[in-house]
Length: 274
Image (cartoon, rainbow, N blue to C red; front, side, top):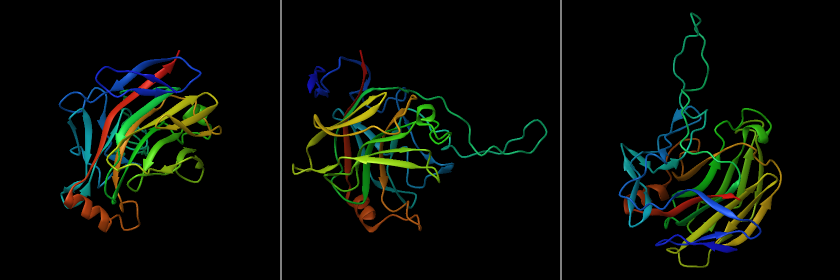
């Protein structure tokens, strides 16, 4: 690996064998989330998610600080995204000319940043308590609209942390989230270092493979179901329990919300291959 230095900030770890050019980044140097780069994800699969809020991220000391807390009787946290999935927004009543037909998708939104191939990196300090999880990932706006990931893309999970200091395998999902879903997994590890340390997670996305990195070291390659379309970036946290049958927070989530916990993101950077 080689380093890419940003004055006043932590360096990036770039894979050998390529020349890179920085094309998009957020160092979180301001006083609030940059609305020109990010939006809050509040809906999923046509429904408003009860545990996602647009009040769960602050910019503090050069980081995006995600928190978990109680709001309107729910245990909530936030997800940031640079684009939109076409199936997330709830549908509204429509009329086609004079016909009362219903297309089961909501109003489409224009993405803020989409990108194809290159190197994607996030430096972050993971959450400290159980009861919620964090992730750095990518998604196609039209995942599941066909069976061909070259045309309609994938979900690419660069980092997912469901328990403090434990990184689950990197996943790639294609075919949508129903009967046609396919999944590939590789890597993952548990850190022996102190829980308050920052770690760097990277993805080298090429036309024929995904290569994943943790702290500058390769952590596995996936060569099947490679997306061939532009995708958007997400940094997300989610309360544990809401995906269970009863859609309620776990006891650990309630405890994390009451006692306070944070997930910190130092930077997100995207590089093109020159």
